[in-house]
Image (cartoon, rainbow, N blue to C red; front, side, top):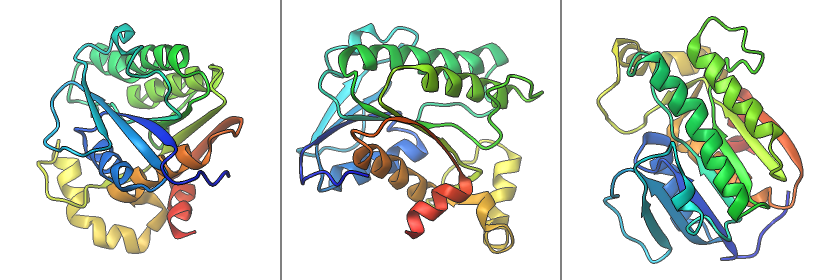
Length: 229
C-alpha cells in the first residue's frame, strides 16, 4: 500500500455517533496522515477538533445535499447500520442497502477517486440466498459497492464486535456475548474483534489504499491480522 505523507489525506466518516464510527472518528483526528475529517451524521457530536468538520444530515434516503461536503475527499469510512430486530425488516433493508447505495452515489459524483471502507458483517451473502435478512441485505450492499466504479473498496466483515467501553447492549444476546467475551476470545480468537481495532483498521486501509484498484473483502481473521502486523 501507499504510505501517504503527513497531513495530506481528507477523509469522511459516516455514522460517527455509533460505536465503531466513534472510534474511527477519534482515531482519524489523531492520524498524522489525515488533514481533514468530515463527520456526517444525524445528530451533533460531543467533540471539537481543529481537523473536524461536522455535517448534520438527517435523511440518508437522499444524500444530494452532501455533494459539497463530500467534494475533494480521498477516503470514506461508512459505519451506518442497525441491529437485527431493532427495526422492522423494511427499515433494516432501507438502512443497510438503500442508504449505502445513495451515499456511495453522491460520494462518487463528488470524489470519484475516493477509497471506500464499508462496515458489513460476518455471514454477509451477496448471492441473496441466505435466510437471514441481515446477511442478505449486507450482501446486497456489498455487491452494489463492488460493482461501483470507485478505484478501491474495502468490505469489512467482522464477527462479534466487542464494545470495549460500557454501553447499553441492544438485546440479551449481546449482553451474554459481552459477559463471555474473555473466554470467547481465548477459545475462538478469530470470531471476535475489539471495536477500536476494527475502526482503526477501517481508517488505516482507506488512507493507505489510495491509488489502489479493486475490491477487497476482509473477514474477521484478516481484520485481526491487520492489527497484529
